[in-house]
Image (cartoon, rainbow, N blue to C red; front, side):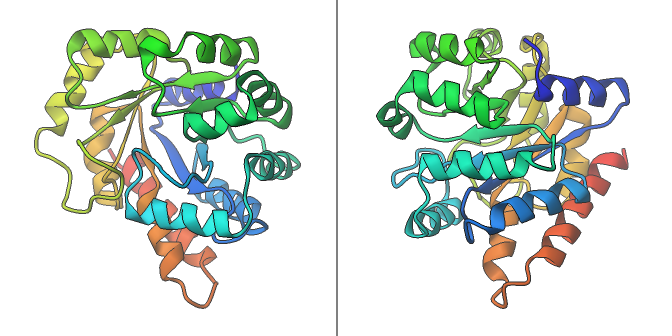
Length: 267
């Protein structure tokens, strides 16, 4: 398959650029704010946008993203709202968009209908953490049929054989989780992360490797850049938005993403 994710990551590899993927919860802090935030992220140097579908019982999200998801739900965000947000972004942006959500809302919406609508609105990839590779046949079939990249997560606890299985099932990239637990941990990156990513590079040969969880600064980006094809950042950005009480979070977003970009580029 070939879509915007593949194109940007191929370009990154050819130009020795590390990819920067940024997660933001759709509809947080407000429904109308999300397209403007995405535009700011893109201008500041983001290569891929992950839009979180708000869910009341997330599996992998820490307190920061849980809070943003709860706020979005209170704002009235549904899957239909998320698709409308994607359509608005697509009016003036061609940045790759990955939807990240959980299987219950997707099944309630209808798996086949979800995939068709996502493709029509301009989505490029999907991350559904609670669909295990072994049970992903129908999910992958519908996704690939609609030119959507199914992206699976690998963890430090994944065996070499498991990493190879995840690589074979994924398209676009493999999301390598840098630590065990949920998103947003701030106690620093594990000393073992470089060894884990070396193992990922050995086993994951079909897809680029993007690493996420626990990345909160340009220094973290700089330290991880040699070990992966790119990074994924979410909680650290959302926390900065939450902390801007006056609502003028755009300068903070711009400065933070530029710091991440500089950390990736100065290697």
